[in-house]
Length: 173
Image (cartoon, rainbow, N blue to C red; front, side):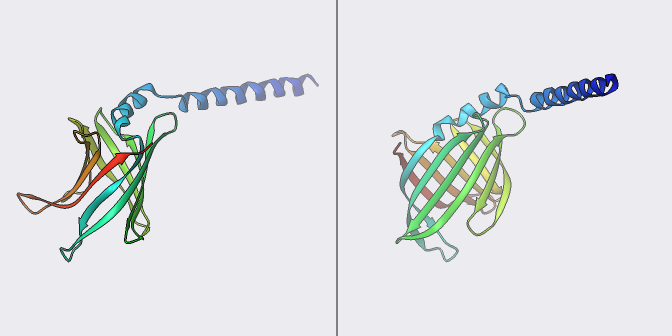
């Protein structure tokens, strides 16, 4: 009976030690929260319109809605965007942003309705959030003088950037 009690107490101590170690792994990291605060200007529910140019170089206008929320105690930023043109969905994406490396550097994980996904580098500097799905394409998000979300997409053709997308959104919530 004494051996069973000793074994039971040993087991309880081991389980407690494992739980303590796991709690340390899952403890809130204030440095991550602080870095994410730089992106707080994006948080909210946004609606507006924009245009994008297809490969045929024809401009298409669209209505856009973006819902941005902090998740996991402020350590991740989730973005869901839905764009419609003539009542049809032309863009539906989900993204998750998290810090990567030093202050101002982020990882932008993107998931599209087509099933495509990827992880891309992003930076925040001088009030501009920039993410780059390729070396030749970049998206720049910032607030304009009216406090609106203003985003452009650009393509690099050598020594010059050409704009292929723009949208301006108002915060509705």
